Image (cartoon, rainbow, N blue to C red; front, side, top):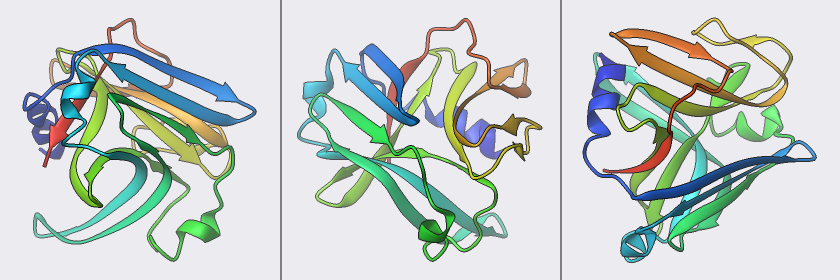
Amino acid sequence: MKKSLFFASLFIAAFGFTSCEDETNGGSLKIEAKFSNGKDYNGLIDEVRAMIVYKMIAFDEVVDECNYTVAKSKFKGGFKIILPQTIYYDDIYPAIPFLGNYFELSFCAFKNNERVGYFVFCSPDLTYLQRYVYSFGEGGISPWGIGFNKGWNIMYISNIDNQYNASLEKPNANLNWYFIPN
């Protein structure tokens, strides 16, 4: 149900996408997103943060949320974030004590230090979703059954005929950045 609500929420707002570049540089990962109408959002967003967002849920309600910022970038019609090659578990643990072998990033949009929404990278028909995952060790296994390599992994989640699957292989699909306001 949570995944269905997530995919349904993607219809709310979208940027006109022009390009995205994922580039590894000595183990770090550079993500660059440019948008054809991104300047229209400059007044609404001033910063993008690549974050670990861990929500504790009880009885279908969020009872607490822990966050840790991995990297950030100013928003100027798009964003460029360089994710560090190495992330130390001990740095994150005080902020998020329930962290396992790996984590997924969320790309959160901020205005004046208040979260105003987030970005997702997916196909226009919502069939494919791309996620950035960091694993602290070889073979961290996700709930999807994927074994991650140590460091950064790019995972693709598909929803075809309500069957969810995940893979580290890039699908033959047109993926775009979308902005989802709070």
